Image (cartoon, rainbow, N blue to C red; front, top):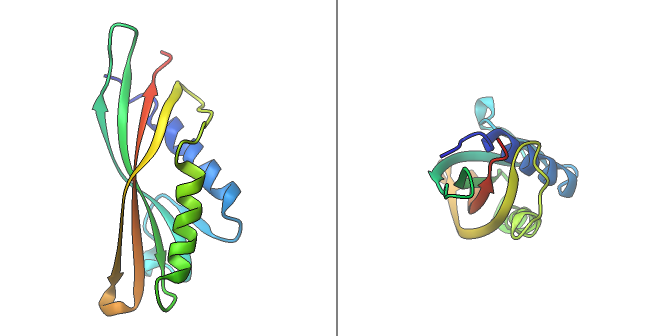
Length: 132
């Protein structure tokens, strides 16, 4: 197994999201106080060995969250659609290794803090090969 591509994968996802979401902040850590407005959070990740006789590889299961303090789900869903469109099937260039595939697997929308905020968690699976 190789976890060697994890940072490169996150960097490529961050670059893609910031390029398609002008005016929407993209973070990889929750903001102090929960953050204001609508923003995207690159969240938890799980990596599973997918190595074979051709080389090292992994499947990364990751969650990208859209969080919004706007009333209703509409704005959060509009941003979530943009995230899904930007990443589902994307051909990202990584600083290390190669992205074999990236696909959407699940979305969950819920209210936070007694309805004061909305959160949509988008789950993706990325298959990568390591070049080292």
